[in-house]
Length: 296
Ligand code: GDP
Image (cartoon, rainbow, N blue to C red; front, side, top):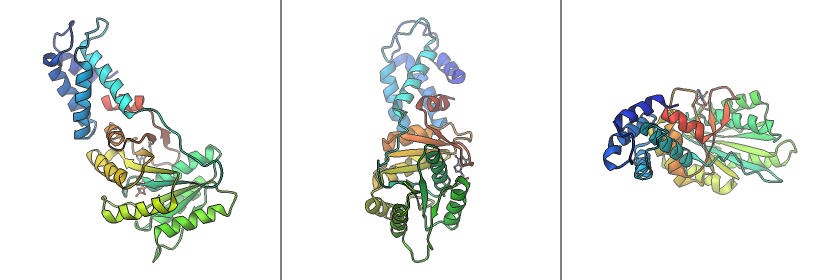
């Protein structure tokens, strides 16, 4: 595993075959690790913090006879990545009775609408009765798109005319409609995004958060946006009380460093990952697998 980074660390650590890892012999190896993490799109600040921790952990470690020093440091790095991206938490808080509300938020294009339907499909398979609410009144086509994907996964969609309407009202009406029927126990709110974080968007989302008191607020982030993922995650986390994150588009060739960045800046667990456009392409997040992917 991790042949390429192990090899470069091996040469960085030169002929260190026994003794202890120290400041002098680890420097070059640390640069290699830094490079690997940046190439995997981990954000700069997070990389710096990570490097400090790993250096501390590595210093004074006795070079094990059974391992090459490169392998030993890769082992430490791998374990630290798992620790930081963990612990595993796929749970979604649901009410025992009444309607559970899941609010989905994220930038436009992050995959929010698609992920609402994917999540509904996953919940259906677990025996829940989800309904989608089209609260993105901003993006042209978002309402129609939600209706389409809702129909594809076989769940009802609450949608209203966006003209002159406001998203809080749509969400409240959606929940009220859900309460009237026994065929819904979970409401998923597809809220608006923007191309970039702005004050107006955050105001709208915090109003929904305050008025609807969702049981879960989940941030949807595009893993391919690399360094930008951390900026938007920070902004959403400051405006809302996030409970978890979903990282999309991990079917591409991105190495997934956004997972570490998003976990580090928000502190909330990454619950699921999107691995394709199709509506069954939502998987549980596993820190160990992502750590391996980041190391390449
Ligand atoms: P929204 O603006 O955040 O609601 O984003 P959409 O749900 O409309 O998704 C934007 C684009 O990303 C669409 O073309 C989706 O099919 C695509 N998409 C969403 N999730 C994934 C994913 O996990 N993998 C891939 N490859 N594409 C995705």
